[in-house]
Image 1 (tube, rainbow, N blue to C red):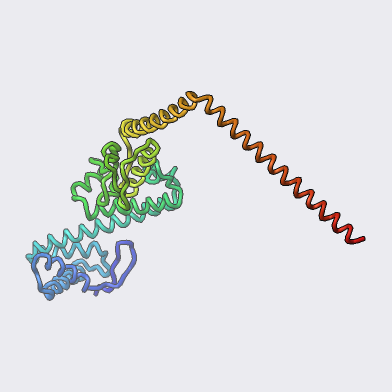
Image 2 (tube, one colour):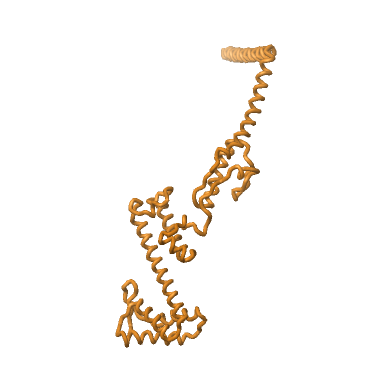
Length: 308
């Protein structure tokens, strides 16, 4: 009687016929079946075949699954057999994916960027730093998740075989990637960063500062490179506005200077009057200081007479 079974990793585990019956029942259920007793009967026939015809006391789990497929087909359950085969293939694929992911994690953890291509695939990230390695953990896990559960199996296989390449697969369902920002269109009448509204800039310094804000804001929400393909044209309206403003300011200043030059007599008279008032203020201050000193000396003399 079968009491133990060899698992895929070589470990010996207790044999449980219920697991075989449950797997058969789930395959039958996928095709509209609902008879668990029939599933258990097929599971018993699998055990009997291995024990009585093959004389194997401790079968390998893969061999048991092979016999399940054989029994399903021989007992006329072709559709259930097909579902079981597909289920088995998917489970094998998941196991393979998990094994591959764990191997990738191991390499990321214990290998440097010089030894590991994955750590070097993004030139903007140092894969040997703590955050660089953590980013690659998430990136590689996301890639394998998309290959397993999101992509069309044909596309996933083509990508895996190198027939096609899906760029930035780790961000497949999250956002678009690599954007060019049109500053002319963005700055016209202002724009929103998602947390507030910024009006149209009116100076070249504002244009350049907002260009940085636009790139930074977009980079927070979108993966890939952010670029401005027409930076000089995008800054041109700011240069034009600044030129006009500076021209008006300098023109007004020039007019003021010209007006001062046209009235030199008045200017000299004003300067002379200011100088005179300054001298009067200095003389008044000196007189007040002398009076204060004389008063202090007079008080000292009075104190001296009283003492005598």
